[in-house]
Length: 348
Image (cartoon, rainbow, N blue to C red):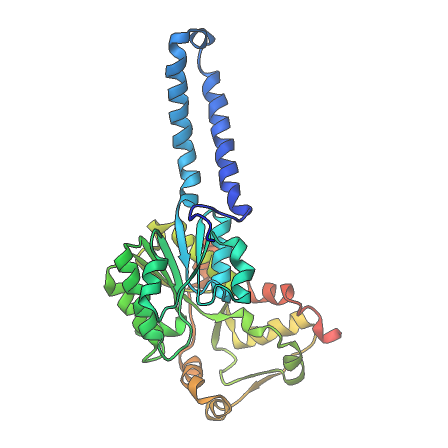
């Protein structure tokens, strides 16, 4: 049985309600201290005073409780990005409806107690999307790599328009940036279609995931880092946790993020600095090997060769200096490696 849409099951999300009570209490006490006791003793004034106090308390509490009253549908909630967004939104006090293709699956059951509702839906099934968006204020979705990615993205946009969604946040990829990304990218076309749809939107374009390095310690120790790019080429990285953070920022601050598309990253460096970062964290020198592009591409599966050719010839970019200045808590590559067990691996 689904929980009511307004229920927020995350304990941290309930901090908003606690904070609201504290705000109301402080205002109540402060206001009382400004009222002459003679007025409070006069029964004819008491009802009026109580009304004024309740009005002020309600106004003070409203901004704090506002986020908790909004329901957000998170598409792909059982995936890595979806999980990060669910956690972030709950921490900010939103009620979250989690969309998954298999509500009875192990991944879905692991997040069920964190969602206000767990609903079945599939990007390829428009009817399921229409049902999932009923009563929803805002939507987050990201599209995986599939043969029907473009059609599925268009289905989400159409359902959001039909439902009157106030804010649709789409997590795309920096390699799909219109005018600069990989030609023919479905994600690029989804972004263009979203912009033209009239649905209020934000497009987040993450760069390379730091999580791609998970489990690679022994391979890098043994083989070093093999690249086709020159040592002075710029690389950019982001943690999936921070994608969740940016989604939360977009929903919390539509005045900043509405109708905006942005490449997002937490760190930026040259290939040389990238190799040096691994050496410093791992406590041993990591060898960098540069391969000719043709040879490098030949060793990769055919479907991803255009992407890696784009990495070599164009590559990810983002205004990391501005992002770090505005959001100083973003994860750096060094910080991520240390946090995920890379520290002094070369000495073990």
